[in-house]
Length: 174
Image (cartoon, rainbow, N blue to C red; front, side):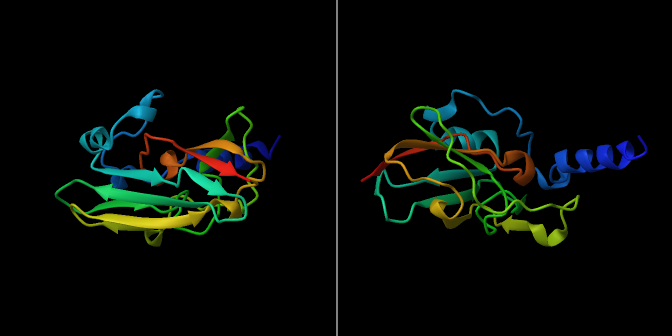
């Protein structure tokens, strides 16, 4: 019973996200039917957002490169937490990778324990009107072995403070 307070404290810290001072607007209003929403809707809703891109068809044996680009449409420098984004090595499961039948690809990467709040060096600045891009090879963190159609959804928005409204789809070919 005396261990409950440290456990509850640790749970609250784990559930906490990047500080509100790094966010430019609330990011809890992500629409569930936004798969077809154009990128211009994202920039109007929040000055700091991200877009994912991947080739439509990828052969087995090739790398599964996902391009993740963060855009700043504001007139001032904006910051986001790099935790739970491709801007750091695979340290957490921030993507849902699902086959067309709904089966989720297993995450096989590292799962980092974090101190809260994130230290200052955990944030990346994006200049006004600028963007930052990074590529990540999904095969390094996800067990994608079966040919088929897959969808990728970004789920790290609560930690990073970024919104990615659109999921991406690719076909993994023999």
